[in-house]
Length: 369
Image (cartoon, rainbow, N blue to C red; front, side, top):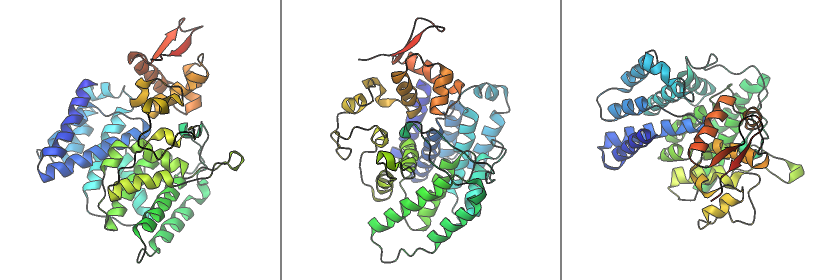
């Protein structure tokens, strides 16, 4: 872990002090690596070292991709696969970097499918193919509820319609506020279709970055590097309504992300504010919120301010059911038992979680400070 932080800090150093080309490459790699957090994936030290060589100009992006492919055919690489889908994270990071460096784009459903294929070829059997089955996904931000995604038999038509509507939209004479509001709604609609079995958020992000550039926007990719989980949760909230509970879909969170990304605004982007249980007594617009008070709304210890959303999701389940098994936690948050096991080990090592009374009749305890 310490080695990973050292390498990542090295990427930041290129952005701060490198030559212009090194800065640009560093930013693209940061974005590509940050987007893996959308699915809770971690990259390997080998990927970071390969990225460094590309940033410095020692190798091309094609050579970087080849090195990573070869690495995972080697014995060392096969050992890495034992991690949290590390091979997928490494390969997709390199592929996103390649796509974002290319100065080509075609605003069409075929382009979205091409992006998905290029990102996930050899990783998913269905890479680049429209899903032919319906899906649901439990969302932490929705207390385990799901967004309603497009029905499998309407995906192609819906993609054509939404992209066609956007293609015909006239931005001339529109204020920047109107333009960003419209773009966020288009982005949310495109993501809600969820055209593929997996990898939709990463594909949507790459598609939108390239599309925004064709509109003349100077895109600050750093937002995807540091707030990819926020981006995904904002997409979820933009597509979820529950009238019985007074919840209406809203793009307000996604607009904050876009305005920070395109206009350089500095509105705080906090995942907890999007959770359906967020306490309305705390003003989500205020930049002076006490982080510990915000965490206490979910009864989580201050140590969790740097926890991932997956880790917080596990803690939220344990908070309400200390005797929960890894199997029941996995079912609740929509992750594999293997992922939950890795998370509980990490949280235990960080002193956030403790197992009491053994495996069979034991229970979890969140360490309060």
